[in-house]
Amino acid sequence: MAADLSGRVGMVTTTIPVGGLGEVRLPFGGGTSTYSAYSSNRGVPIPTGTRVTVVEHLTARTLVVSADA
Image (tube, rainbow, N blue to C red; front, side):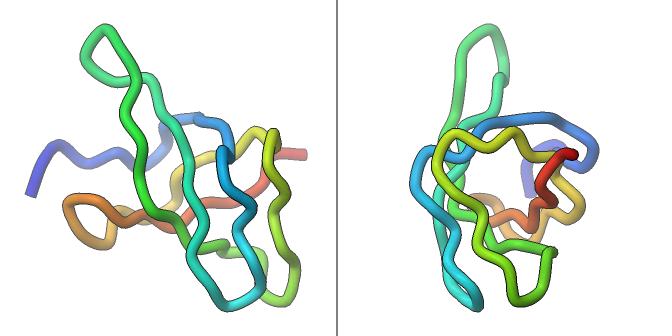
């Protein structure tokens, strides 16, 4: 697996629905990279444009994120 992304801050680019996958963009290697993402905020969608923090790196291209307050 690539470098662990836990703790990195990014932005939701496609709304993360309750129980489903959305998309986030993170700064990485001098540019940005897009990842599929689940919400750690059970029962609450995370809308596009929300700042998030990576809490778990599931696979090379899939993360679990938490909405920042």
